[in-house]
Length: 400
Ligand code: GDP
Image 1 (cartoon, rainbow, N blue to C red):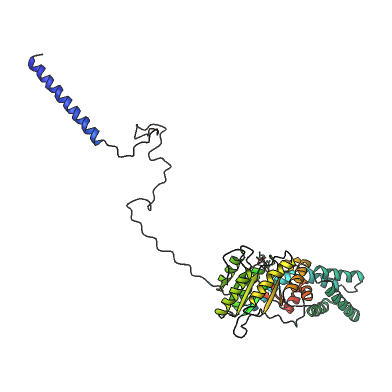
Image 2: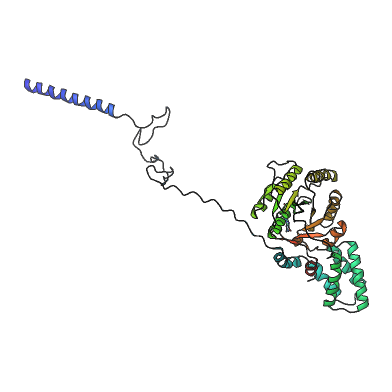
């Protein structure tokens, strides 16, 4: 190599070294990472720290939620129109007249055991002592009670003796008359639900918990709304946690206000007092007061109901006290009637769950026990399954 060639080689090498240095400097300046620095001790990331291979997760990982139109930035989303407020639909309850017709069939179904059994026995003709005992048993198992059963059997025996042989139609008519006499169509079964002078009528609804008290107050509100009455409900059963909510729901369905306390265990007398005051201020026709019925002992019940009564009466007389009894509880129901009868002045009975029993005789037994009429009957869990008690329809249903 000549001297000139040596000089040229040196120049080329120096130039190449210079270019390499410049590229290195440029790379180190412009290669600043745009990602967050990796945490100390974190695992090396495929695609970032080394080329991804088989077994490496895709970046972003497969199970990353896919973006939707709403979450994709830069996509204009139309603002959802505001939800229209639900318009409260107030139901129009069925009129009482309609109910009776519809419910007659149900009542008849629940009482066929008594009616059919009696007709079959009596129209057999030539009744011997055994047959009369069977008649008696049938009446007793229908909860008619010993006294009323004896009266009815005596009356029927007398008729059979006079008339001799009988056909079913005649027996049915005898039974009809005798049962009707026992149910006593002459009793006043109207419910105090109209304004008395310048104040609303006040109805206190009492009974053991579970008998259907709150449901009955709700259903009764519907009966009265169907008669165009202005009703106010008072949720004075403050011991059962859900009772006030339950009552309020019943009220809302027919546009009836409910006075309540938001606190469980609030003073029931105070709630009852407020409800009557609200009824006065709103010029309502009637205030219906639901109460708690803890039958732990008579003294406790007396204290509780007695206080509600006293406090309410500071501003208004109580016009009606309805005792709610579960028709399926038989003798137990009669004992409850007795205890409540001693504590408050019961003016009417509501017999619930008559749809679930073949023991329609309880109507007669309870009226005799308390000396007050059955005014309403519950015939199911539906909102309009409460009907004013009609003795003729009831007896017809019993022996249909
Ligand atoms: P309360 O504790 O006395 O207020 O009783 P509720 O009003 O909560 O009623 C107790 C249960 O009895 C509820 O499941 C009601 O639906 C049911 N119930 C009320 N009245 C009747 C009725 O006439 N027939 C039937 N089958 N069930 C009824």
